[in-house]
Length: 476
Image (tube, rainbow, N blue to C red; front, side, top):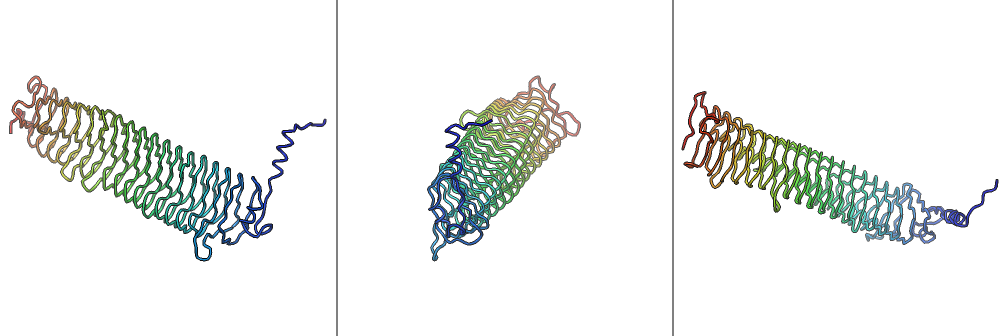
């Protein structure tokens, strides 16, 4: 049976048939000559060799296919642009770009750059401008400035690339919806591993090693930073400025700055493992944050394990985190109306600080534990905070300390054992202890303000003992 074809189908086949492959140097002696002879949608196949050219193309849909080809942008000692493309839907595959200024510049939508090598760029390796592009399986080696410079690069995908010994940023991108995943950033000499300015960024499963400034820097809302690994970062490992950020399941070690820093409301920082930071392990400044299930070990140089600072109204949750060996405070809550639940601070405060320091007001601390902390297991300078079932063990100074100027804090069913100072040291006013146990401390309870502490029901519900002998609260 004969099949009839419509006019549209015939035209489509004619258009497909029009695409051609031009070989260099087989059919054309240079890459530029092949571009000049090409039509939109053609393939330019370049054989092995070194081509000293500054190539330009404005055609849509061209495919540049290198087969061992090197484009060297240095001509007669002058660095120019190796390859400049202004068309849409262009593919560049398999080339090595050597010398030159900006080695590959693409201005157009839906560009694909894959399996290319960028060596010793005088400025940037790849300059990209256009939506929905992708850069995959490339190597950026020795660029004077950025490996990738993106401007207006909405929807750019950066996948499985290697950035090594880049002078500025591995990748510096301005655009929304940028995704960077499974890349390696090593020996970034002056600035950041990857810097993104735009909303909806996703940075996941990358490795960052020997970065001179920040590992990741993002300015924009709804960023996601997940499952990355960081070692030997001279600045902060993760910096996000924007609301509704998610930073989760990252591994960080030997960070000269902060491990994770988020500025913005409704942040989620969860399940990260952080070790050896010379600044705060986690620092969040914003309201309604969730900081959960993180492990922070060995913060040094007078820095805190986990810090939460309010932006305007406060709120949020700090839950299930563990901080070990923080030189300053294990946890610092400089915010209001936060729920702090089920956290532990161990061997914190070696520089004269505490396991938990509560500076804000109206926070609720439940079932938290401080072990072998320096100044105090728990220390409060704010007002109307509620401490429920919190435990201090073997504090070098006080188990619980209420500083002067604090008012109306409540400690219910809390306990301190083995403190080097007071089990409970009250210097505030209107402090309440409905229930509690303070045992085997050097001094069981000290009330430095006469009438400042109210023990509801007398000492019936609060048990103070020194060496097993019951005592009354003391005024120092």
